[in-house]
Image (cartoon, rainbow, N blue to C red):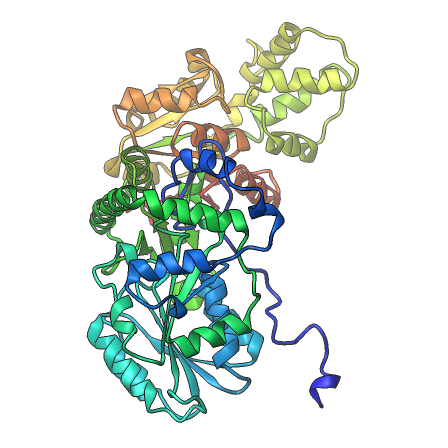
Length: 581
């Protein structure tokens, strides 16, 4: 089939969207995109005085290219400004890769490398990079089918680096490849994170005609929203890169913002880098102490190997308002999390505390009903029968769905709401009285509470109590909760109880906070069976863990708990033992 007959769009275009970072939200610590510290607000004021020609006329990147060249001590003809480092990489791939040709890529690597190769029809030749840069293996992979070699240093997502010897050896070996280009195979030196590294190879790279250095203003300079990067190459290669892309890749105001930041931002950049290096060390030390391997990171991020706990920690951090990056679609790092290092003390402490909460809790907090106590034939049946007393029929399935919608932590209020929804005008006091008579019983009729039993064996709770302090956080009245705990012989296992009378009910975070305060701890996990439990836990800074209660559709219950923010959903409390460190 000729190219003219090929299907459109090109079959080389990836069908799945790039899974980029989240957007900033109030109260959320955004650590999933490796963005630098924001520039000073003065930069916006400076842009407000820019000449309107920056909007009316096509932009001219040459002044910025000259300023970059002056900083690097190179000829401006070597510098090509692009729409972020991404576009510089795309230009190199389009210029020096062809269908059927190979790219030698140490992995894991920046995800866009795979996509750029796919679009062109090139073949990735992966070389594992697990410790030092795999120079020998990269050189061994070179043959005449190779037209590109990629060196990402510091590597995204691992943070590992190549040194001068690695670059010299790879560039020299690549120059001897018969790729069809005069200089052999092209070497891409991706230096997007080099400001944070001990190994800046930009100057060394200029000695080789077959090395293109790619850098950006998106990371350390804090201007990712401007989308400005650049390539540094030999004049001949730079000319090719100019011609393979758009002549106007960057907006005029973006170019002005970068120039202004370069003129005044050096001191802030140096302080930012110092803070990142210090914070990076603290983050790596904390992860190591928590049993998480990291490796020698040199970027503004750390990649932690969380193994089987990665999903739990990712969702636990998310519940605490901390966003980090994961890569579930990439087998080589599917169990890892990449965490951007904050450069300010307060967010750094928040991050470290959140990680400690996920991986080293100081106490376990339990809801009672549906978690420890089986209340299907007591509290749940009381709701149904009380509603029936006033002429309203409610099925168990309907009740379960109401509970999963949330705001259902008080059965008296819930029953009253059900009746009101059916047009029944009755006071909450009357509903409560009817409900309590069914639950507690009378002198002649035992109450439905007599049917309550344990959902978890006492020895499991005892084992948990041997490891961490336990507390009950329930919407039950104190007397009814203590009656159940005494009946089942559990009172001695729980050091603290927070009950209906002690304050607002879940989903308000107050009872969860009260339990932690009473225990004298800061880092807790809260186990509950309803969205109210999960939301209360997250708002209180506890890791929310769901458990499927009896009498509910397990699948629907799990979905509701996860959508409410549960870090994980257990089938039984027995499974909790496997989560604990």
